[in-house]
Amino acid sequence: MTFPARQRRLLRDEDGDLAVLEGRTIAVLGYGLLGRPLALNLRETGAGTVIVGSDDPPSSAQAVADGFVVESLAEATAAADVALLLVPDEAQPEVMERIAPRLRPGSTLLFASGYALAYDLVSPPPGVNIVLFAPRMSGDPIRARFLAGQGFLSYVGVEQEATPDAWPILLAVAKASGSLRHGALEMTARDEALLDLFVEQAFGPWLGAALLSAFHVGMEAGLPPLGLLLELYMSGEMSETLGQMARDGFLPATKAHGFAAAFGGMTGSLAIDREQMAEQMRTALREIESGEFARALQDEYASGYPCREFLDRMLGEDDVISRTEAAYRRL
Image 1 (cartoon, one colour):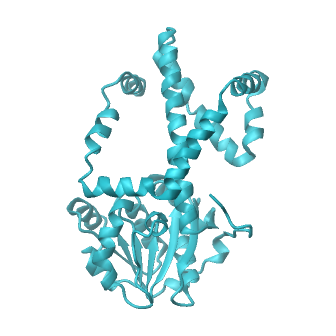
Image 2 (cartoon, one colour):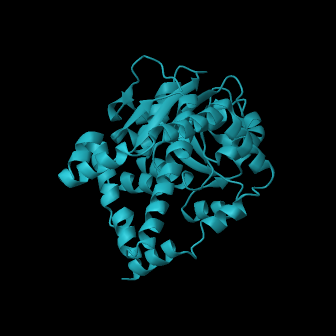
Image 3 (tube, one colour):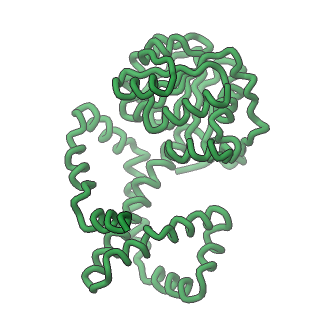
């Protein structure tokens, strides 16, 4: 993974001008985990006229209940000056085939993920602005932070500049969504996709495996299940520590928990075979960079998600961790 040596810009509220969106129609294509909060934020900011494009009946019903005009994906695209493509990554190539002919010359198509662009899974037509606005936050926190007057970090970039106002439109959308209150870091679609997949597939599995291993080893030793989960994450101490890392830095946050915690963490870290960990991460990164993972994901989608049933069973709630969590919430 390589990054340009140039300094990446961090854009803030003063860099976006909502007047750019006046008189424009903004189509939110997909009304799911990300589409709903962004559509609500955009509408409440008063930026342009927001409509929803959806071919999914439950999503369409929710959008109607929220007071939006709802059209098909193709019809909403045809009406849009700015279209936000917010359907799942793996579905975007199929959706693009339907909406690409409906994009008007000079309009703007916004991607919330660099995945489809990074792996050449879509071929946007010429004469259309192609921009990236990738929130680093899931849907519910995006909405909650907007309502609280806060912001959320996002990555932004222009991949295809068909008109001189591609950047102003992108930053106006980012501002209207609430992101620029925190900041938006300039990023290419390829770098965004590699970063996102790398952390999910190289770091995430180690974190999940460490939590599960610690829980089961503690159980074997007779430690109370609820106490284990509280120490690991349910008390909120872990999330507070991560928040402190974001605010103060990784090392200052590590030292803020007292000498015993720092000493134990240091000695424990030195005993871990980090090279084995690094090599597994390198393997994951090679599969991501080569497109091997993207091909596997597209095959999964084309086959009707055959792994979903297995994943649902693995993430089911009939296990000791879920039962312990539920018992604590009842308390």
